[in-house]
Image (cartoon, one colour):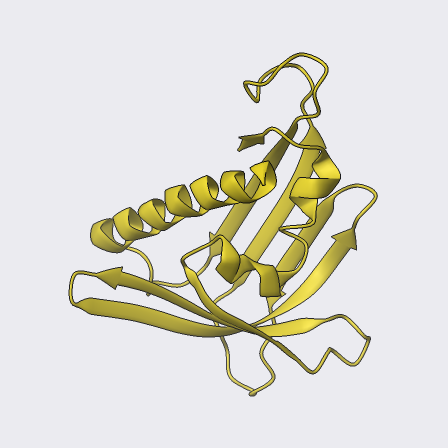
Length: 151
């Protein structure tokens, strides 16, 4: 996603999971929980997507495994402590400067590009219908994120 703002402004909206419900409809609820023993912060995340009268939701415990504000890079990974095996979820986000005019703004104005990758290793959110719903959630999140950086 290209955005008409400086990279640090865009990064400030993706480096803290509790901010995601403000712009990503898939992130229904996010609450900070006790950090890992090594101090890495953790959150309980409830993902929810609607398909007509039905809703599918999933709760995950996510840990920030990479946090590099200077390099505007952050990564969250699923880390559960219940002794069971769980499908991996990995969310990786990097923000870079894109002052090349690709954000559709005047030359010389700050611009940035968000590259976000989500990896899910299970089967709950796969299949044509759920993939379509997920794609719609991503589009809605991108639009809301652009509104927030423009404010």
